[in-house]
Length: 600
Ligand code: M6R
Image 1 (tube, rainbow, N blue to C red):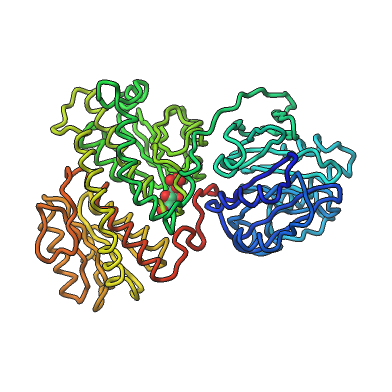
Image 2 (cartoon, rainbow, N blue to C red):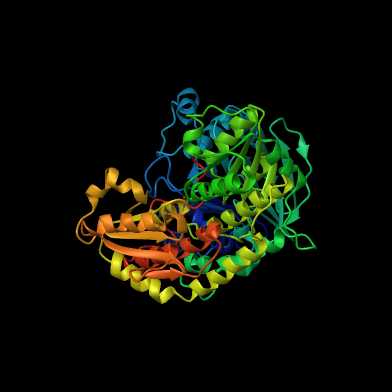
């Protein structure tokens, strides 16, 4: 949440910052701003709304080779011009952008800044004001910056300009992601390598509680005790085409279409030279040593975790619990004797999940992170990582990461089963290949999905998704997808549960999207559909070949029953996409949301 960029070099920084912010807009889009510095001093441009709005107010007449920028997801204070970053100290000497949440900002205000009149409602302004306060007490800038960092509690990625020194950007990180990018005659800072891929693919990772003195020709990393830290750069393995929309109108549609390729890539990445599925031995050891697995995740990743539970229990015969991360910390269940934790997170940065990871590490338990982002916080802090290999997911609504999570979980379960000597009655590589082919068929079903969206969802105010067994979990994901991008009130239910209360909401024409991909519950779910139809509902049944009846609206290609979530979610993603499109919603950047949720 919130994105940061900074540039120090010889070129005019403004366009580099604006382009960088455009690539970070997925992290929040309530307001945006940049501050640039040249011989005439610091200039700040900031506005409520998107980068496109900011672009219109940036004065391009003066060149400025140093600058910082920010795109905001509001936490402290409403989205507004005043609350937009960068924030300045009262004298205007210091200018700061911040990603994260300062938990003790009101204490700092009370203890250090009683005489300072704040302009904004943000926690960020406290930081820049306290730096100025320490300077007024006689500290040099580096000392004042370091002292400020030592009193901050919470999460931060910071970039600071000092108008008296146009040759330095002061940078710091704790819990919020931040990278330094290296170039010839310039250096950059960014929340995500994607933002600065336009100028460099060479990056240096930063660890928590580190600060950086960034200059055009040098990068000095120090810990808060002042010790200099040496760290080698790495090459960001991102292809510029991965982060562009290409010919697609929206990232979400592009990412939905990428799913067959992602499944094939996962198969390839997890296969050995002799075509066997392989998982790191240490992970297998940890899986087999566990008497119970706790999957912890949020949102779509939580829904993937529910499917993962099915796989691990059915294939590897290890009991699994799936928990919503934001609840786990405060409501920890009674743990088994030898638990193993699996964190599922596309971004690897979700604060709710990280909170649990920190907690369980303190208790001495092992953790595996399944993530799309190598080097992300959840990956670095867990004992083991499995990567999704889905490529950057930019649309706020998660699509290809969900199917990638399920595919990786299926491989983890199958390889664990094999290591335990439990035979599977199917060849997973072959079955995943069949799934990828089925996904290709769905790429050509867009017109039909658009028709369904128009027929069922054009004007409705609510919609229910029902399914039984594994279809229920996919229904939960379908409902999340629909509500987050189209703002239609949508809920997922176990088919048999409706009659215990929710059926009271069924009126004439209420759309019900029912999934029927599981043979053993096929009759059951069809019975549930009849119950709601008798009360006026408008049913849209999505079934699988071999289980279909005449009343079905769409029939999916046949795949292994365990793997149907990989396929049945795609019509739901597409229906949500078209419903949002026809309701004139901002598909890729739905209101109030951000891609990477780094606040608890
Ligand atoms: O990056 P994560 O997978 O940890 O994110 C978790 C949720 O915030 C995320 O899945 C969210 O629910 C998506 N917007 C759903 O499309």
